Image (cartoon, rainbow, N blue to C red; front, side, top):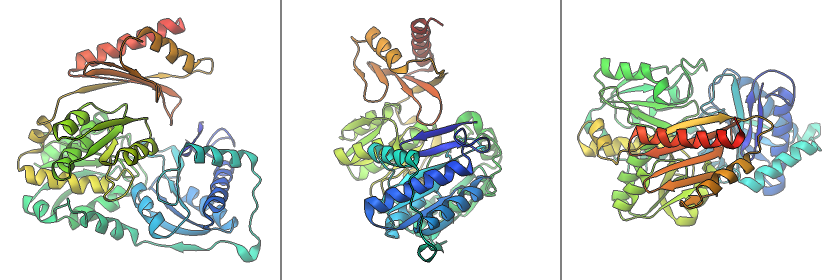
Length: 461
């Protein structure tokens, strides 16, 4: 069993002993800490709660809502929802914060509490540490019976979210409708099965082939939208002669596409394509994290903008976007952040922009993909053990490559012209991630193997 406490929330597996998994005791403690922090910081005793369709979602929702009520905090429960929908709802409702019950791409035994500030954005490092300290102190002051919080169910945010997408100037509903797309979708039996068909209908897409769109939490495959998990949708696209496939993760903040021939557009290129379209219409700067493809930098510079990299983590990308006035940004995991809508990864916004781009491109999606710089990212990992001194390890690797351009703002990234390798501790799993990118697979994997060999030598493995 696993319990991971981080600045952005608490994530763990369901079942087991308190303190070692995401148990009811841990859920109540962490929810109470966040509720207390929200009221102390904002003076607002209102929090928005929404969830994906995980099997444990109803249980978490009951505990979280009940705990907030017990703190004297009013709850706006938006029910089965998406991460970006809750992000939109928080400022709309004038709430002091939000809690999204989702473990994102993790398998079904996982769940989590993702925490939002009063802007509907993920809390930052200092705020997260403050919540963790409150949770450890557990000095909560619960409300008396006459001051318990009230719960309001609100199911209007599906339509409100879609309306916000349709209102974006760069989303051209007529162009999408006239393209007469046939689209297959895989929503991994979570809330995308509610939101994506509704969005496509609103965008004028009449021919939608639905795969795994029953929001019952029974994930039919590993829910992370990676090629190795998407064989079924690739087959459906080919069999149904669809123009493309659309895939989202359980909380609908990550987005990837399948080409008309069943090949994969590549989750790294979701942001690249959307950014290309946005930059052609609104020139400006871009941001992605250090582990994302160099192709975004190439496309940004080709369109006359400046690219900047942030530490991994949505809050870090958002902060860098605000700092550099970026018009588009996100992460290479299929996360698109478009400030014209809101500062959060949003698959619905990404779909609206991408389909407009593809409709105006006027050619098959595979040709759109081939129009972008070709890079390959090799993704590897090393499982952590208690005796590993990770900081010391990274320092020793840095010393070996000190003559190369490198960054230590998030782990260690070393650059070799257009090739790079990035080593960092995961925020969500007990592993070190080792990402490397080059213009072909062989070079990227060779670089990864070389770094892994260095690490093993340093660790005397």
